[in-house]
Length: 228
Image (cartoon, helix red, strand yellow):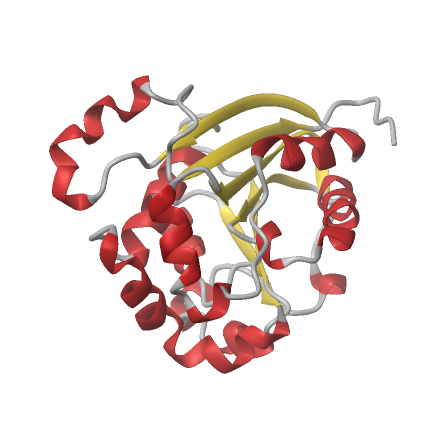
């Protein structure tokens, strides 16, 4: 994923161009994910959140806005991406490309569209790493592209930094989390309608069972007894 260094300075613009068919910007989708995360924690949540694979900080910035009392950290192996994180965001949290700089007591870890960039051989070890960094009772929230959605597949195929991506179905992602010793407490399909059909978006909350959403969300919770 260090290949993202060459996209760091133009990441947002490149992603926005790739999302043209859907009609919304990268910030729109980042904000939607942040809202999903905010619904998983109590009001006035003041814990620690890690955005794992944070890139230039688009999602982390939205998390900061929706969870103003929380401490938001970010990790990305692309050091150039970390350098492009907004200075105001960096002033309120730790953003690093070194795993050794992360904590081991996060209340929430968000992994948004990261696993499909990893080789399959690395995905389980990444899940173990993340579970180890959660406090007991903490939540791991995974967002991924849905391979069954044709618009998603089109966007991925036309995005320069997704060309080597290998999409994964929800059962594969859930399998890694189960093996890493985390309990699955939520699964939903999200993002059904492009901007042109935005008037339909209020009904998306009724379609979370339908496997045609552009993305899916999985929520795992760390219990006291971990079985690896």
